[in-house]
Amino acid sequence: MNAVARRRAPMPRLALTWFRLGAWLRSPKPCLALAGYALLLGFWYLSVEVFKLPRFAGMPGLTSVFHEWTSRNPTYGISLYIPVYWVHILVSLRRIGIAFLLATALGVPTGLMLGWSRAFKEYVFPLFEILRPIPILAWVPLAIIMLPGSELPVIYLTFLASFFATALNTMLGVRSIDNSYILAAGCLGASSLQTFRHVIIPGALPFIFTGLQISVGVAWFSLVAAEMVSGQFGLGYLINTSYTSVEYPTIVIAMLTLGIVGYLSSAMVRLAGHWLMAWRVPQLVTDGRR
Amino acid sequence: MSLVSQKQVRRGAIRIEDAVKIYDPEGAHILAVDHCSFAVAPGEICMLLGPSGCGKTSLLNAIAGFHRLDGGAIYLDDEMLCGPGRRAAAIGPDRIVVFQNGALFPWKTALENVAFGPVVQGRLSKPEAFARARQLMADAGLGGHEDAYPGQISSGLRRRVEIVRALLNDPAVLLLDEPYRALDALTRSVMHEALLDTHARTGVTIIFITHDIEEAVFLGHRVVVMTARPCRPKRIFDIDLPRPRDIGIVASKRFRELTAEIAGTLDAEALKSFARGEKEGHAA
Ligand SMILES: Nc1ncnc2c1ncn2[C@@H]1O[C@H](COP(=O)(O)OP(=O)(O)OP(=O)(O)O)[C@@H](O)[C@H]1O
Ligand SMILES: [Mg+2]
Image (tube, rainbow over all chains, first blue to last red; front, side, top):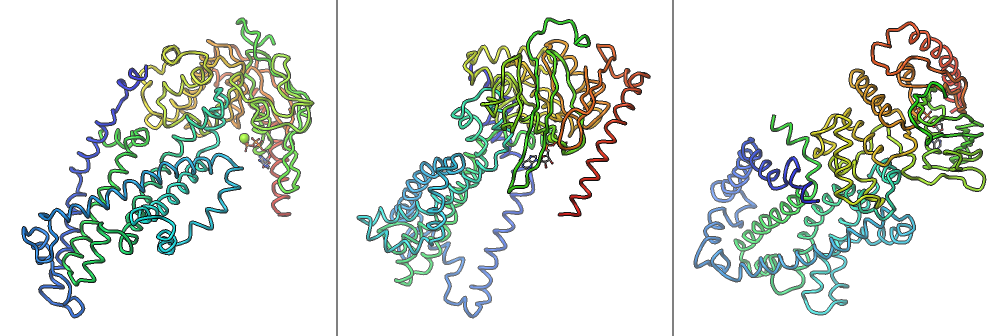
């Protein structure tokens, strides 16, 4: 039966995604984005390699960084052709993946409960409010003392910030739901469990995905911080070791890599959100189609 | 109730006896409903008309079971919904509210919304509920919108879908709290005819809150004009206009007589409410 309903859906999800991609490509946005990138790279190139501005003198230049990055035989040992470069990326990605999934799996239910159950909130929220403002870096020593090995502390630190972002936004999402939806569900005979499933969860979804966007962002932030003090591999570790051994182009390569994988990971979360919330955009799409 | 059509309706009588509702935020003791008594016959369209803030929603919410009464009792077909020993009515599909701003679930398609009640109640299997929903939507002239999300259809259509969603549960009473307030005049008159048509087909009892005198006279078997807060019936008008009604009736002499008479009654209350608002405004 579900299949029938789905087949007849006005805008299947995949079509919707393609439609948006097409609309984006046809809009002036990609050109503007490219112009923005060009501007930044131009500034970098001119300030370091052409005008040689005072404080920029020691900085790796645009051409030397790209030369190094694409070299089969890089001066400082890191480039697209070197397997260790990919190991750093994969290790960071795996840590982000584990920490993000864990934070989502625990943060969403916690947030739903915080928003739904007054009693649960009374117990748990004060604890939240004390723990949340503690900066991730302040947790570093305790995490290292508490958890064995070098992998677990890094994952724990990455998880922590993500968890708070997800749980808090999920809670706000539940609070944001118009009470008349809940009353209407009651009128139609839904039990409170059914209301939770059919109203609370989908109603909070927009906020949950806002939370997940923030969550991946802070996950990368705390991951790099954690990798700089602990761990064997990872992009943060790479930046730190390159700094101590004065391999400046490698630092920039790692930074740019972080930018790219960070962007891709949050784009994936956004895509998942659009996928699950097809109902939120139809207006936009039908308008665009006309 | 001779004015109600001769359809075989014996369900959906509401009787309100000495209802009292007090709001007490920080000891403010706001008396919203005070010893309010009246009865609604099965199959009647009963219009509640009253000045802003007089307590109409408070009364309706007590019938729906959204909050408790502080005195009095409400009966549905001689069964006590709330009263002595039972302060709040159970919320359930025998009395369904249609909200002013609409409460179709935006994350479900129109069809999923309409089928929601019987499915969660376990009364119908999903395929049965969907088939019934499709049928009822078609009967109401809403065919073709089944798979649209509420965000894709006009607000007028949304209101109609919401009423169909209520009707699929075969409620005894529909409780409408200014459902058409946010609509433009043209859409509103389409809604009115659709509602009368629905009522003629189903004979469901309707309690309908409004601010709009013409709406009240056009739709109602009776119009209950409420006093300024605390709310209780000030005067009940029997609307002896013939049915089925269409928009042409608005121009009739009787229609204008009734609206004028009701306006007079209502104005006195609105002035009272306004004067008190002024006073309270100064006190605050
Ligand atoms: N939860 C509440 N707490 C305190 N006072 C309330 C509450 N709800 C309503 N009131 C007050 O009770 C009075 C009646 O409110 P109610 O909403 O029932 O009026 P109404 O007739 O439906 O008004 P309107 O025409 O504006 O919809 C108002 O003065 C309002 O300020
Ligand atoms: Mg009201």
